[in-house]
Image (tube, rainbow, N blue to C red; front, side, top):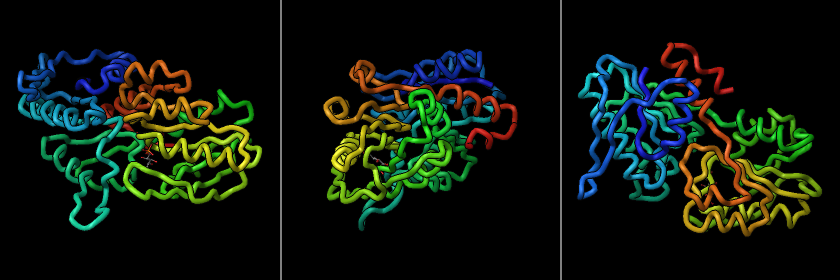
Length: 311
Ligand code: R5P
């Protein structure tokens, strides 16, 4: 087994390598003067089972291109099997036509990764489970729920007394799974998006009065969904609101929004490398997905079942 990292999340790649007690394969992934990507694998990978760790997070296009070019280099170096390990799969939210004459970019990206030569995909908390079907190669989609649930149990004395809140109707299945795991109640925010990047709370389904609420979602991007939902919950009498989110996209003024808003704390995983602004924000806590991803890599390499890791 060989582990290889692109530039998108070297911290996580190193943590996965540490967990597996395996080195990262020596490689150069750099830019030419005109910004074209160049990859050089500096070790023999002929006949090897190679795992390329690369989240397609911001800058999504550069990181995607790096992944494609690394895969191409591995194909030409005769790697036996190539797994694209994408802790965060960017473009996932463009998973359907939202209007006439719009693309389904998640499918296009899946095609690109497959055509580049990936044999399998390992990812975590896909925005929609159906995206697995966009790949015509085996796709293992891990869920971060167990590691986030563990943090909730450590942070909240009576975890079964919290109220898990889905910040929109699309996230109910995910939130219900967490509520079931904690034996906690579930509430749902009825969110509308008048325009892309803007969100409005229409209603809250469930009695949140006096409750410690935990918003649970796959992505925090602008932070609008979370902060608006947290405000609405406080307006309806919630005692406090925290949030647990798998992928901290945190673009634009998101960190400031979280800092200034009513959230007690925001817990994210390390699926996306974070800038200092996030690392220094006192309200944002990170839990590592490295052991989960590392265990999945080990099981895939050993041809063992990974389904126990989905529970
Ligand atoms: C949408 O369906 C996702 O699950 C997230 O709720 C959304 O991407 C969050 O975006 P923002 O933080 O920009 O409101």
